[in-house]
Length: 281
Length: 281
Image (cartoon, rainbow over all chains, first blue to last red; front, side):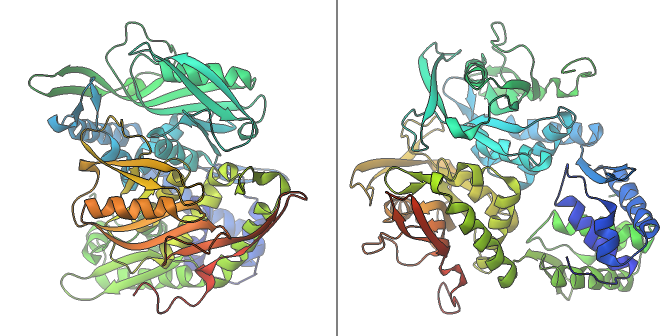
């Protein structure tokens, strides 16, 4: 890294960019001190300013760790009030009558295709799972991919994509059959052997959950890799919850009813906003 | 927006975050001036500091537009030297012998699953197409999705995903058949009618191109939407280039040869680094 003597103002811009681009990464203070030929005390003052703004604006938290192995770590967070406001807006978008598809599904591709919306959703989900000590974010193709990628970005974790097709050109793979919860059909999903280390700690993310068969399938597949499911999160859960195949999950929004005749869709914030203090210990 | 009187130091942190999170968006100076109860001249000084750091660090450019409809716009860019260094590192990763898959394909899922690598790749591609006046970024499932999403993030554009399956649950769709260039099989791809407005200006992105059949298919599909292809970019092009079905494209890396016996892979920076001044006007 080049050394340079920068004024505080330029240093703040550079450090802000640096920290934002490396979430969940411990950055030793010496990196900044060396880079700017500054005393650690000046760097600490800079970080205090950044921390205050990140706090106040609901961008995230800066944790400083003291000691020889110490440094600073940026953890993206969503403030609950901002998140709730955002999800209310999302619900209004989701209630547009022309989203209703056969089978009670909702057209989501436009929402999942918008980087600004996805970024906000990803930050919210990452925020809820930021203390789980995770190794990877996993999803199944296709619509869950942008969502998983956005979550992974904020957690600084790799993404693993389960394929619906067993004939993947990714070397040897593990396939399982699972029963789709809503239509009771037997389906296949597979994951390349090399895509996931044994005993990984996994966050499962998907866009939509009805009975939970697909997520249940991913959980079964993970057993083949002796992996641990550390969390499950879906953007939207559907109201067919009587026979849910997944117990412990977080949803950002909940589809509570659909009138196929009038095309009315009822959707409200999900259990993300409930008290989560005793779940997912 | 809440008004607040902030010191320059805190203002710089906040403005840096704001601009980074809204690439390719014209932000009127009055937004900052109102927000901070500051004179436009102070805001302009702040922006000059940010601009200088963004320039020097190869983060991107800040364009200021004068006049009543004026403001500031952040355009992410990659410096050519940084990009070349990054692609050389990428090539070394890609030459690992165990990446070689049957058919001369390379295992890429680990690279495409790393948010930090993807972010860099996305910024490079966005940088090359930042002046094309685009409406959407398009790709075909599955492996191209994270790549397209990363590019779209830096261009602040929506992503449109073409499905390989005609039975999509996304309402009415347009399907085409195309001949896969490498194995000459007839395949299908489809796109939901509502996924793309007519006459859109499209950037096509994919992870791997051999003969170009899949990209040619996307181009044919786009004709059904009376859309214009404004650019094509692939992460890796393969050496089977004699019969390329696509003329005008940018590649970040080029697979120049594979020895299936010794598992040696030869890969070098792609035409991204050639003089592109007269292509894609």
